[in-house]
Length: 306
Image (tube, rainbow, N blue to C red):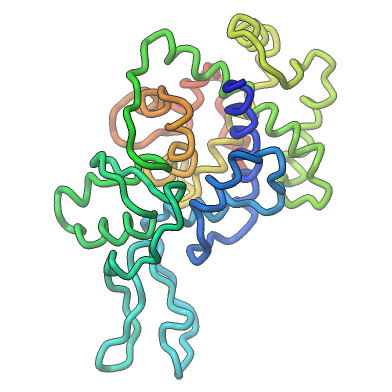
């Protein structure tokens, strides 16, 4: 039953993530609520609502955009990254300053809590990013990231055999997500035409392993037998995350929308992504990402992430 729930959460989560490449990132809407409160009724989540698109903005630590400033309110169209708010100086010029954590709205419940890499529970993502902002320029602030959604808890160690099992399930989920997107994407707002053609080949292949709870042996066998069906889903997920900027590398912040909701459900998440960074340079290149999922070097293709 638990595995079934985890799988449904994963499917809905990645369905939501799929749309963010086709919409402008936003930092204004509430985020953690949308993702976490849906979990008990995950099968009812509307695909088009795209809560994880907002999640991408929630974890964005690098964007400050200045638009046309209204004279009567210079901060009206002045957007600051998470943890900062707009204020005007003596010359009525807008600027971004660190938000006082005490000014964040009180959390409605434990579901809004987040855990930082300092193993401290913050009342909400607002409290976390406001706190992180106050630490800018310090060693502690540089190392502090949002680790996962929910209060901090004991995450059991990931054993070697469990680490090897992780990509088996994730590859299957990614393939199933794309198939579901293909079936539901009537308005063409989740997949572009080129992507739909690639997924169509998977969808129509009679050898495709149908979605469901499968043994690890069966998943491993299917990957070996139908390897080509998994190449595009792995590339597609990389492309969904590689957004700020689109440069062929995933940073800790770009990975956060995928990692943060997943860690409480999959205790091997952190170790898996650490292992993906084979050269330990703090970035996961497309080649490293593909290797983590068992994709052969000759099949890595940057055109597949577009």
